[in-house]
Length: 445
Image 1 (cartoon, helix red, strand yellow):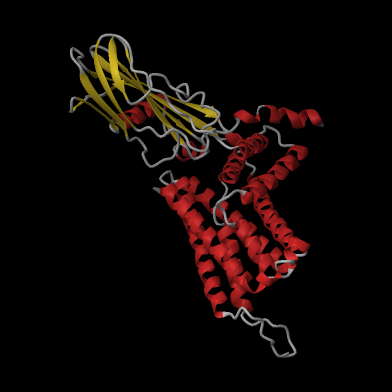
Image 2 (image 1 turned 135 degrees about the vertical axis):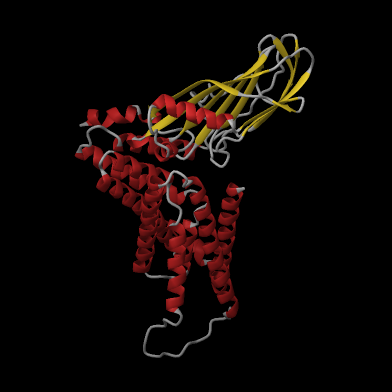
């Protein structure tokens, strides 16, 4: 039993695209000769962009059309005069990706006439698919000429988009323009590139996602492999909920602070699961039906909407808390539970739950699309549901933990702050909602 389970896990680290399943990555390598300038332009598309733009007709014809379109987005000048680019070679190939999906690689070779008989200043920019996210890298080197100044390095740190550095996931290179001074002679200016790091949690979460993608894309999905895939979905959903920027832990604090019943907490957790599952399914349909649909941009806008909902709820809670007296006031017995305003408060909690599940997990979307492509639609939906259940588990665990902390002696000594607990909870919700919104807006800029 251990051998069939372990085999797909060994190669899992190579299953998914390292820059994310929505990424479209670009590399432009400039080589300047005495009589011409050559450009190697590579577009490495992850699983979802590749799925959205399938090849129609012969592959060679598709490559020529794609490179012709890329040529029109390349801008090069020498001493302010535009360079006349022409395509000399075009190729396109598919590669195995995550969860049975494919990635694609377009390679275009272009050239433009140039005469280097004196010092010249060259500028270069590539606006191909400028609105997409991903790695963007430019290099420049001389062959028979000297680069006396250059804003980009001579060698690619990603090996031409074939060997991405390990510590780049949180903030990939985004170099879209280059400026080079070239003159007769030999030797290049030295320019270094700093590659950002990535935190440990992100690295191991990506590894778990890769293992799940490998299991879903296995040629033969046995019951043990299926159960393991569902378990990994639960685990990834729980980690996704605990990551900063989602506001789910704030929901837990709100539930604990309002002294709600356990069944109310379960209802909120169910709402998070349902909202996340529905979001992934709808996003999967839209990505499949239209090539112009940009999933990454939608996720960012959903992040803005989620943050605004949390912030607005925080404002409402703060206004409600300010209307209350900090001194407890005896309430006459009406012979029934004190449920005044319960419906309004319940609506606020449900809205928080919707906000928490509004942003779908990209890894859940990829697993769903891969399962559908392999004819395992039902299993794909089951993995998405497990993602949502994992998120709900994190919410429940955080709420129960905060309730337990309320019984500790240390917390009991802070009872004098109890009259102000509603105000502090409202301020926390407002603060986190504002932070989530600003973070999402920053990603859109």
